[in-house]
Amino acid sequence: IRTARFQARLDSEARSAGGDPAAIERQFIQDQRIVRIGEPIDVAHLVAFIASGQGSLLHGSLIDIDSGATKAV
Image (cartoon, rainbow, N blue to C red; front, side, top):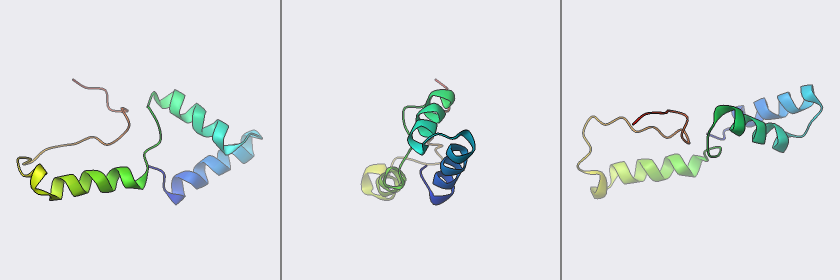
């Protein structure tokens, strides 16, 4: 999830590599085999769903919100 800590990591790696943070982010996405970096709003939407009546059938569920990093069927 894109947090201040994650952005600081990208910025630090960009400075070390002499590149730009956007290029480092694209490489991270490719290396991790994910679709994209999650945004805080993505987590907020999931929480809203779970807390709503629409999520009332969920009980003891594990929901991965990691842009596909967890590979399972």
